[in-house]
Image 1: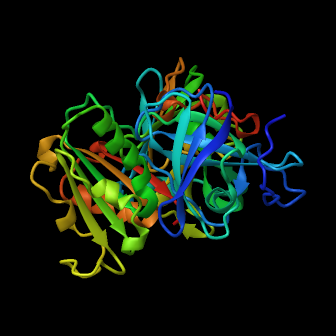
Image 2 (image 1 turned 45 degrees about the vertical axis):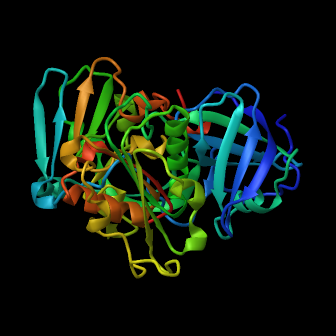
Length: 197
Length: 236
């Protein structure tokens, strides 16, 4: 067992609500970004899904809004140790964007306005596990939190939920994204504490 | 990446709310300036709490220096700023983060913009620059509420060839200070030799609201977003 830190009692997380190891519950909504916040107006926002053969399908903001959206209530876990419980998001399931896409790829690179990237297995974006989210707690998503739209993949650490989403590139092999090249884990399961490479 | 047992070997108050701690950490490899560590505390019954802290000094194996500013009602920071004393043990994992880092062989001019305790990773950069005998042009802009909130001001202000330091006081300025208390403005960020056309590497660290405001000013001045690296703390 670990050393005991003399004089440290700590505050216990609320019982009955399990959170991943090494996390603590916050009430506010912390912001972590590697650079400046890009301001992307909805009028020029686009999202492109590109297959491994280079074929692209693009949605404008209005086209995204025409797709069926879902409300998602979920906990969010950040690799910097904070967890925010019971957040309410609204977004379009990634399944809807990939429904008509022909691919044999197993991996995806999510790309953001501003240049951020993050890699995910394709299967982690399917079957109601991931959304293109544009509202949180009933309000439009602010730019500082990734608005107008961000990826939402709540079962992985939050750096996988790319802010300012502009593209999903399907890949036949696993390339690493921005933080994954800078010391963070390629997959990022919070329950297995996959923080660092 | 594994946890290392750390022993507190020194503590020193640096402001009314912040304390510098030095830990002896066998097995910890030297870090790069700008990197951070995870600190883990364990209560007698096994309960653990982990937080990330920027390193305030780097370059030495088996030693970890941090400056911790107390978060009101925090779980970990009040222990580190008030209770921890030499001989106490905790655990350290790191060094972490490969992006918000200054490499001493990079000749590009460096503009550092700090809000409050956001100066901590920049202390590591200044100390690494000095230790390496580099003359890389550095400009440090520090925004603090009052003179009492300035972390390591005497060290930061001590003469260092090629280093230019500029303070901004937002609530109360020192007696005789040439400017009234005010928030950071574009004028604070414009300096010959540290503009977008000089290939400047920009680092911004502080509370979220401060970083958002500062990066807005910097990109407005034409600094390419890809040359502006940020580290934020707190919510929005």
